[in-house]
Amino acid sequence: MAFKFENLQVWQKAMDLNDLTFEISKEFPIEERYNLTSQIRRAIDSVSLNIAEGSTSQTNPEFARFLGYSIRSVVEVVCALFIAKRRNYLSNEIFQEAYSKSEELVKMIQSLKNHLK
Image 1 (cartoon, rainbow, N blue to C red):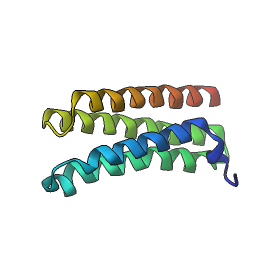
Image 2 (cartoon, helix red, strand yellow):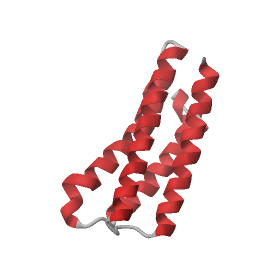
Image 3 (spheres, rainbow, N blue to C red):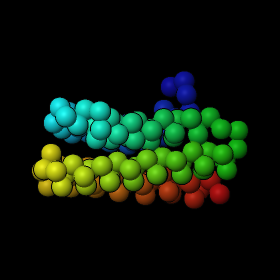
């Protein structure tokens, strides 16, 4: 693996959540294409992108800052999942799966962030 982020378990978990979120958003109604679908996809992409970008940082505080952005993006994804659930775009089972994976990912990111301090 050529890049540091590829070896990070937290980045790999972020990519797994990215795949799940993308599949979930495929089921949203067509009228949500430019609203909720676009928003949740941009937010979930931001998670792994910020981890990757931060991993190339020159300093630990800079990497920690990017990890903070990743956490915020996961929270944005969770909020979008709540919206989708309230609009009946996804089942409770799918919501719970994505919610649990999001919660696990935030804990992992926060742990890495704390380790960098």
